[in-house]
Length: 265
Image (cartoon, rainbow, N blue to C red; front, side):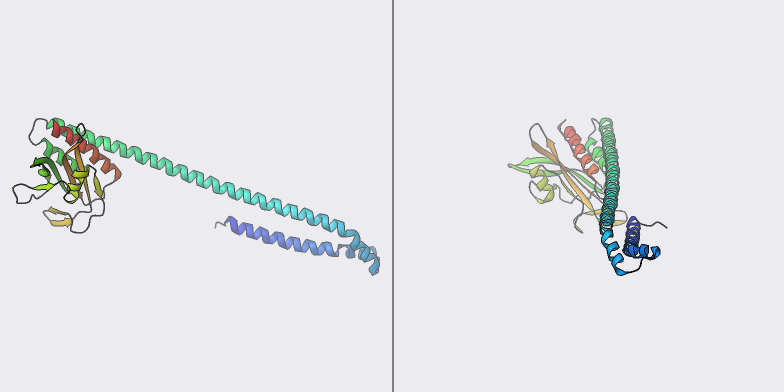
């Protein structure tokens, strides 16, 4: 059974108080006891003995007070050192774990991007290279639905036009377009800034499979940029049953840059 330091301190403090009270009583009756053993009767000698003992009482009281203060200060110092040591070790462990996690995530993103580059390399020259890259991106993150759009211009208006899809049921319309600024996808195209949502409202995006359909938990929309001209040439949109992590978001960012290279080639 482990006894806490606080309980020990309370016990020792109480013991010190009891010893102090007993010692004070013994000191108070000490002159009378000495006179009694010496066989000296009378109140006058007793009063004189008490008077003569006053400096002794003061000295002993002063030293007792000093001893109590020293014990208290030493105890407080030990407690503060223990607390400081615990906090230091805890922070150090958390910092080390965080560094290891960051390194693992960086390695994971790098490995994923290398696999995507390999897919692009082997599919080079094929009309389906973008579709194969989209498929690799979705499989890598266990994405339920993925859509790739390209930018088209018509009558001075910019649209996003469906280019390729992964597990996506395209609408019946011959030309599936989204105007810049329309909906979340259009807003990403207009602002050229990505959107990542890990709490998708029920029914907002549905993922279809042979077992039926269900609402996605998370979604991400990334602009595909032509940095040299500062223009949006397409958009990558994905939805998943899983929560997208920071590493996933970094992977999608770098994947969209590879898609931009391929679309401009």
